[in-house]
Length: 105
Image (cartoon, rainbow, N blue to C red):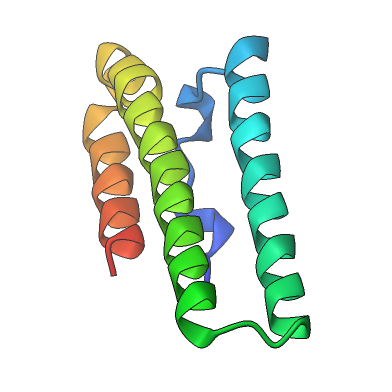
């Protein structure tokens, strides 16, 4: 996955830091996904049936999409909202739309 150049994200001053609970929740989800990936690796090593592996890969992709959507929602409701309140809404909304386009490919 390619990432847009850092200089395109000049609105970072509008970032609202995640709470400890939010970080813990995201980390818990990512660790669960990491475990699923290790499980798929083991399935491949064990020469398991392709369909079973593909089903697990699909579950991993869905879990990653959920984490991404959670982050996207939080960004919109916290960071973008803050930028709008501070008069930087246009730039922040443009950045949001760019990332939505990027992740929805």
